[in-house]
Length: 274
Image (cartoon, rainbow, N blue to C red; front, side):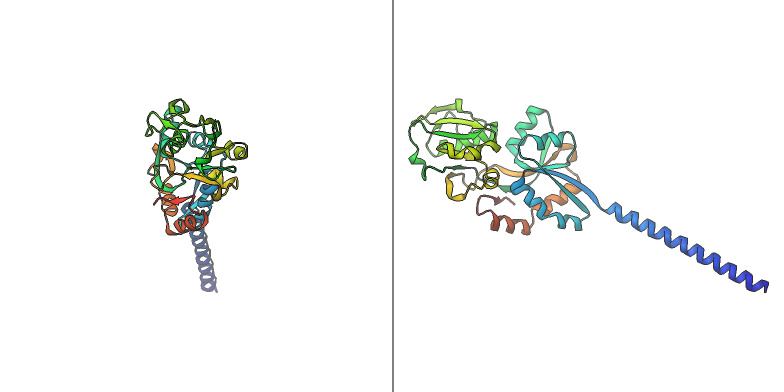
């Protein structure tokens, strides 16, 4: 009898020990699984940037990245959010803008991946050709240094105005040396331009804001060539340029899936740059 009781006690102790091992194993597995998922917060303007980021969310999830997209409606806050580290990366700008903003605001940023080009265009609801511009007409262009200069270079190359140097990316209206039709150049922040289009002869608008404001491709009367250097990039603080999460993000954005989506959805107003 005593042997039977001893055997039963031994079996009971064995079962308890096995149970503890299994619990510990499950706990370790759960913790290990949780450790495999890392969060990545990316700031972006809505179109096409946030759309492209949302497109690759599931792809990144398979890579252990939980992508959170924070939308901004201007070109200032995404870089400020990067500087205060409330986001890990942003996706909305080209390198000339990034470098100019970084220099003026003492933010050390780097581009870690070329994604797409948004050819800047002159839109109009009143005329169909730049030759139809009349003496004294008003055109609106962006007021930030790089996009403003970019807009003026576009007008220069079309013969509407002549600049001192049409390779100077930060040209301003003060650099205009010839203006045969006395075109008035008004400057506004990018997000304010599209709503004013019907009030003027034309406006130069970044593609993302034009698309977002439902300004159609049929209203383009002048557009940059595909050789434009203003490719939109994924940007991080320099200290984070080797972040593996960001490398996975860039890889996902430079996929054939994204390329096909861009080509099919944006009708030439957004062009893959990879």
